[in-house]
Amino acid sequence: MKGEEKKRIGGSPGTDVLTVPGRVRRLLITILLAIIVLIFLAAVGFLLLQISGKNSLYSKADDKKIVSTLAGMAVSMGGSTQNDGESDWQEGDIRYKGVHYRYNQDILTFLFLGIDKMSEIGAVKDGYDGGQSDAIFLLVLDPHQKNATVIGIPRDTMTEIEVYDGAGVYVGTTTAQITLQHGYGDGAQLSCERSVQAVSRLFYGLPVHGYCAINMGAIPLLNDAVGGIDLQCLETLDFSDFHAKEGEQLHLKGMDAYYYLHNRDTDSFNSAGRRLQRQKQYLTAYASAVLETIKTDLTFPVTLYNTLSKYMVTDISIDELGYMVPQMAGYTFSGEDMHILQGETVEGEKFEEFHVNETALYELILNVFYEKVA
Image 1 (cartoon, helix red, strand yellow):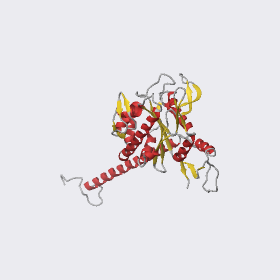
Image 2 (tube, one colour):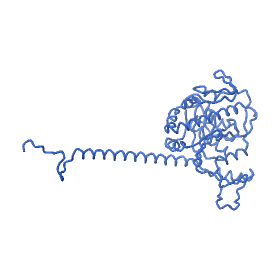
Image 3 (cartoon, helix red, strand yellow):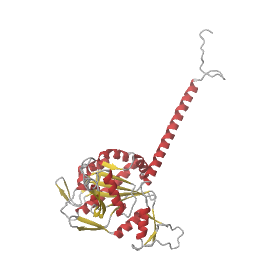
């Protein structure tokens, strides 16, 4: 018939002409399948990132040295490595004060350094101008207990460090303040790697899975990223740029956080030790604030990472960070999880020296890096 439509909507059974509802259903099914594929690929990508980050972190360090060293020291420390008939005793286990300990192979340890420079990271003049590490902390993550521990190391801790000349040529080793080790380097990767080695030696070969050195000029950025920190002043501070009385309640914002963490009276004995107590107090509050922020914003560490990039040197990669952040969202941290090496501060020939209490250090390592075997 003239004018008859050659295509009909809603054709009879058996026709290959699609109805409008049929087209819509196919389009919706196609979109749904595309969404499912994208979600699947994103999940696979995230899983691969997690696996890659985890493998990368655990491949960086070896626990054989610390296990063998602590076992070798057990008898001199009043412990034992003898099996008293336990079926679950393994090589490297230690019995100390009646408790059976075994090294926690899943633990992750990171070295954080605060460098006494206000500038962004840049080239240094020579091989011993890398900057001293005024703040030295170990962050320990225990996936078994879902717990974070921080260990503060006094800057004047006497230990074996490597010495280099101005051209970067290795001279030898000497016993000196650990803060000096970072200075012997490029102020970047070399300085950090040498600091990692010095800290590892101090802790009997402790594996360190990553480092992060931050110039002190970044403190205001760190502080304000969590909205500032509230604390009670531990000592009276009277400097040209900052004044606070002991016991005064403070809300640290901007440069005040820097002054609280950095300033000290160098003419007063053990001023570095008292400053370390302030740093411990601040970090306890800051770590809690960060963990709370991560619970509601998993992207916060990445944001902070990018904010600090110009002031920071780190070997922690994005995929490693991608593995750690979801893990840390369920971690706990309190003041009891913050430790400072025990020892004695004395006047040296030129500068103050902090001498570690070896027994206390041995017990700290057992309590933090080892697990009790039931």
